[in-house]
Image (cartoon, rainbow, N blue to C red):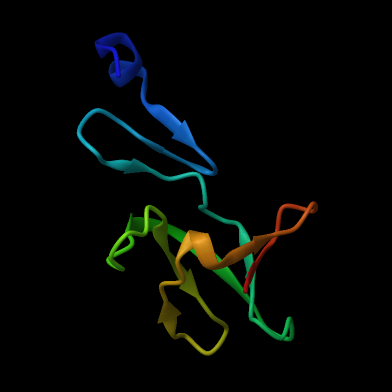
Length: 88
């Protein structure tokens, strides 16, 4: 990867990683539906790299109505045309 491309950041799906490997968030404020679609949470804006071996997704911090926070991986999310995400 050229240094000019590294300075700008590399776009991959809904997130961008800069030359330092820091995830610049684009999930903040998006609605995340539960796997059955009955509950809706909100992506808080914090992301981190997925720790599962071989996965290049990011874990999306999601706050639910009951106050709990979960961290679903972006690779396991279903992306709906209306901009909402759903745990797959």
